[in-house]
Image (cartoon, rainbow, N blue to C red; front, side, top):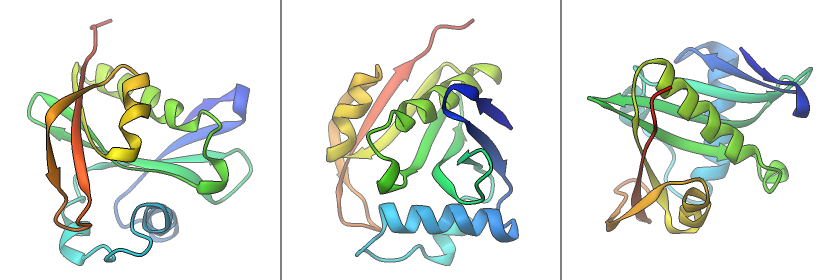
Length: 156
């Protein structure tokens, strides 16, 4: 657990498949990222088994207001499946997620980060110091155009 007292928020690592907490994060991701699109397939979900699942909660509340996954890819870390509850968007929570991701990466000695994001999210990541690469790709699951963004952190 990592708390942010200024916002009465806490980050929790949730184990893959953990009965209630994992399904809460999956429900949030489905609402925010897949609403109106194809649901997550069992193969997609199984591919996340080794990822670190992070939930952001208001202290004293049982339901996640934000979440994301961290995947180690060689010498890189990828931030995946970033979701903030729509009623909580615009409150700086996305930046808190990024700060957690970057701090975690540095704590395990990783300085090269990447994110694959929809076009609508690109300006947010640019404001947080990420650089968009010129290539885009169509996400097979959603059919939406995505962009790869990268950032190199300075070691502490």
